[in-house]
Length: 98
Image 1 (cartoon, rainbow, N blue to C red):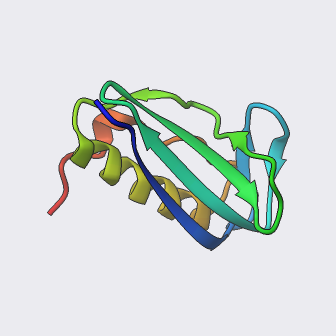
Image 2: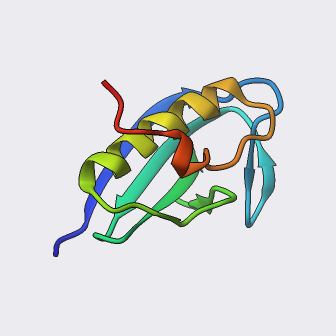
């Protein structure tokens, strides 16, 4: 199965930023990238205009479908905008969405 991925650029973190495995809390303008390999989704963030990616704390997460991983990506983008030292949202709270 081929990998599927989504990238959203120009996402400004809310107050408190997001928590990453490699760099701790990061804030500012980020790109959010989610890759789904058919079993799990890996979520990374990157400062806009740089080449280094950081793993969002809580990643990877199990995802059984491409749609679930797309929903996860959108939930992560919204969580980044909310800030508060966010991590990957709990997958069981995502649902399939409308």
